[in-house]
Length: 58
Image (tube, rainbow, N blue to C red; front, side):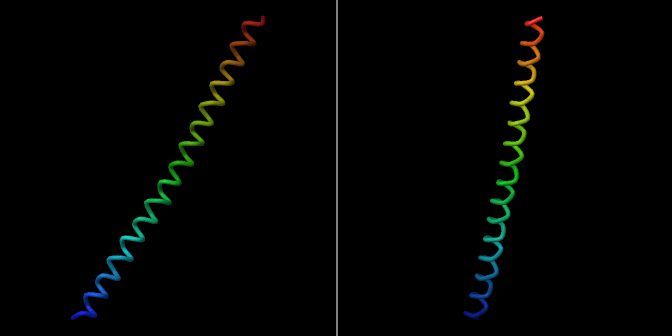
């Protein structure tokens, strides 16, 4: 009986650790996606400002 309880505890612990790792890797993925998106927005803003400056120079 005690062995069975230890086995169940081991299985539950493995499931919890797996879910935690999955969540952390998922969070890292979305953090990278968000950083890329912010960089893209910054580049677009810079290009728009540069375009406006060129138009004003004419």
